[in-house]
Image 1 (tube, one colour):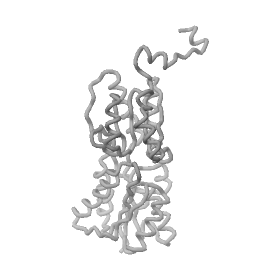
Image 2 (spheres, rainbow, N blue to C red; image 1 turned 45 degrees about the horizontal axis):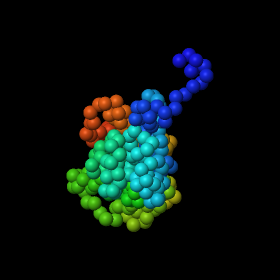
Image 3 (cartoon, one colour; image 1 turned 30 degrees about the vertical axis):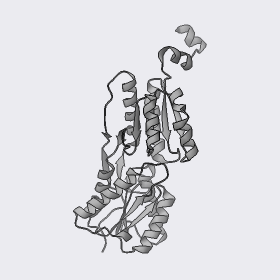
Length: 299
């Protein structure tokens, strides 16, 4: 061992795999690598794997159909990994069948998928909490920036966040007007554009619940363009606790994306070590964080 250390010897994982049947690598399938949630979950996964000497192999779909074909139907995962973690992907029946055929432990982070284990927050519950906080401040005309269903992504996340908003409004005896809802991509530019459309149609709204912090930051920018004071004229709440949330003083429901990644990796490593599969779902807590974008309505 001393000689190996002195010479800088590193064992070949390919050669070791011939004896053990393991690659000491875990596949992580992501829609793209540009968004905060995916990047932070990936960081948590990689940190946990590096701790035990495992490698992370990233399969970036880039939301392109040809890349999904490459990953799921040309069996790249079968040859190179011991387990699979997928982020926010809505699998087709054929893709679920392909994953099952690998015989690898598999878990999904960020939205439930039928037939697969899931790590994440209670999507409906976090949306109810965000909306309830606004109602508790006295707001009655509350708009919602709902996440648009993007190609290949898990549709249940935006659907359940919208449903949580609707349930909170109904429970408080408040109407859910069609004009109070606008769809957006889960990013700042989409949130800004959607808010401009929403407020042009429903200018008497006193609050907005956005399905993500990036959308909420876009809403803040749009409100400033319209000369609105936040929170005097308009309160805004998001979901995530994105790194920019504190900078913008954004009230939000915080979720631990890094911890979700770590837990997903731990579940896979435990199973590879011989532990019995745990069925899940594995719900992560979420906490409301009040900052400067929320206050009682001024009128």
